[in-house]
Length: 303
Image (cartoon, helix red, strand yellow):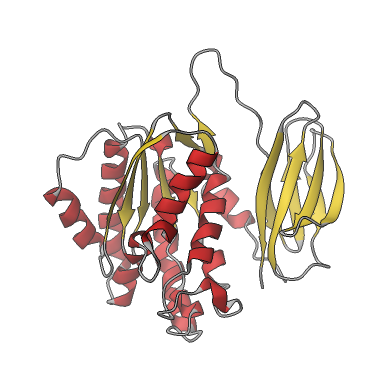
C-alpha cells in the first residue's frame, strides 16, 4: 500500500476534521511549543510561524502581531511554566499549539502528557478569546526519519502513541488538528527536508507544514459576507477521494505545474481517483467550481 490510510482519522476525530481555522483580520497570532515552533536549526524568517505569517499576508490578511512562546527542549510542563511566567497574555485571535516530542524523548508517560496537553489546549482556547475555531494543534513530528533518529522504529511507535493522545483530546475540544507527521517522515528519503543539525526540520519542510495548515484556513466573516466551498480530501489505499458540494472540475498537477490528471466532480457523490502510477512526493489538487472560485490543496504521497 503506497498511501497511508487516513480514513480512520475521519471516524476518530470527525468533529475536529470538520472544524476550519477561523482567522480574523487583523491577525494577532500566538504560537506555543518547543524546538519545532522555536525553529531550531533555521533562521528566524524560516521557522514555520514566520512563514505562516508571511503567507497570511500574501492572502491579504493584515498581520498585526506574531508572538512565539517556545524553546528547544521544552516539555508540556516547561511550556506551561513559561506561559504562567509571561501572564497576562491577551489580545490574540489565533493560537497554535505543538508540544510533546520532549515528553517522548525524556521517557515521560502518556498519562502525564495527556493531562498536561489537555490543560495547555484549554489555556490556548482561553488565550484565543474562548473560541476553539481560532486554535489549531500540530501533530508531533517523527524525528526517527532524520540522521539523528536513524530510522529507529521504536521512536516512531512512541511518537504515534503520543499523537494518538493529543489527536483524541484535540477532537474532544473541536479544535483543528493538522497532521504534519507524514511530512516529517520524508526526512530520510529527502535529506533537503532536514536542517544542517541532522535533527530538526529545514526551511523547506516548514514550508510544507505551512501549506498543510493553509488548507484549513478560513477568513472570519463579517455580516453579509459569504464563504466559498472547500473540498474534503482523504486517502483510502491508493485512491484519492474528493468530496465537493457542487459540480466542479478538478486538476492534479506536480509542483512544476505539469497536469497529470483531470476530471469532473458531480457534487453528489465522492469521486475516487487512483494515484498508484505516481511516485512519492507533493502534488497540487485544483478545484474550479465554474463560478470564478478556484481552490488549491496539497496532496502528499508517501510509502
